[in-house]
Image 1 (cartoon, rainbow, N blue to C red):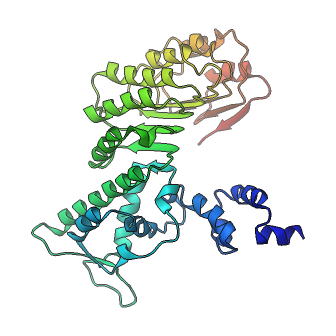
Image 2 (image 1 turned 90 degrees about the vertical axis):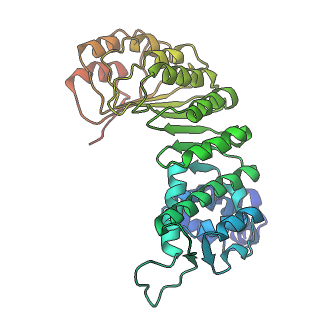
Image 3 (image 1 turned 45 degrees about the vertical axis):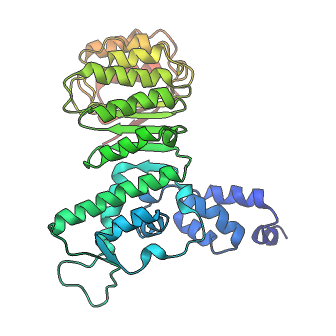
Amino acid sequence: MTCSKLFSGDLPELIDDIIQYFHNDYKTLHSCILVNRLWCSLAIPLLWEDPFSSPTKNNHFIEIYLHFLNDDYKTKLNEYVIHNGILNSNTLFNYPKFIQHLNTYEVYNSIEEWFEAVSYPILKPTKKSVFNYSMKKANLSYSSQLLKFKNLVFRSLFLLFIETEVNLHSFEVISVHSDVDKIIELTLQNPNFIFNIKNFKLASNVMNNNITRLLTLIYSNCNSISSLYFLFPKYEKDYSIVEKSLSQIIKSQENLKKISFDCKGFSYSLNHSLLSLKNSNCLNTLNTIVFCYVNFENMDILSEVFNQLNVLESIHILYCKSIDSKFIQQIINITKPFKLKSLFLNKMDELLEPLIQKSGIKLKFCLLL
């Protein structure tokens, strides 16, 4: 009886709980959409909240997104490619509305893989292949024309998500492609786009004006971040700008639970950023700190900061330098009872034994090779 009610849709709350249980099980979710309309309406949002990182590697969803572009952008796309009516297909749901996670690198990479799969190849095509797109002849070289087309699709998708007024949960800016700067500009022009984000990641080799403005927008407009990842720029000479921006973001957060510092081996001093934890709203929320490629040589405030963090449960020390007697003495100087539940290391060092001992017998130790 209960099973028949489930499949008939008489217990929608219970059905929703069941489908939420399969949140990251794409194969099962695809099966759920075939049961009936209710199951389909509950499973589709989960399948479309983060399609760019889907392990299925089927990037044809991009064509569905392109259907939702306004006529102006469709016209611009038509200036570069000949297509077989893909942009005019009908859809059952407002799929762009479901997006919750955006990573600029994953979006661009998906566009590249998608176009490679559906476009007519320069080399000999196979007889069995069906190609939906081919580049129009133009004065530009094929590579230049292709780059312009992919950049246009890249910008068009972000503009689509902005205009759809999505409820974005995760925004990760990986500044690898030159056109990422245009995405930052769009974000700056539409601050509500990232207003509710819970996860923010910035990885850039430089601190240009747009990135600085983006960080200003983050600390002034986004106060609900629970996970923050910051890759310190490789080619930035004025460290004070970086430190100030990161410190302001930390202090502005009301529910920060995890923070990751990634220095890629460069000798940034994290003293200022760490001290901002001491005077922030996250003393009773921050439970995880990740140090990656950090040089601890000039860092002398660890015990001062750790003594203020009331719910710290996990520390990651990965590929770090200067884990010496000075570092360990700071750990020994921590007066507050340590309640670590997990410690992640890329290698075991006998100097870290005081940290393990201070954490007590409940510590879960993980060695990452």
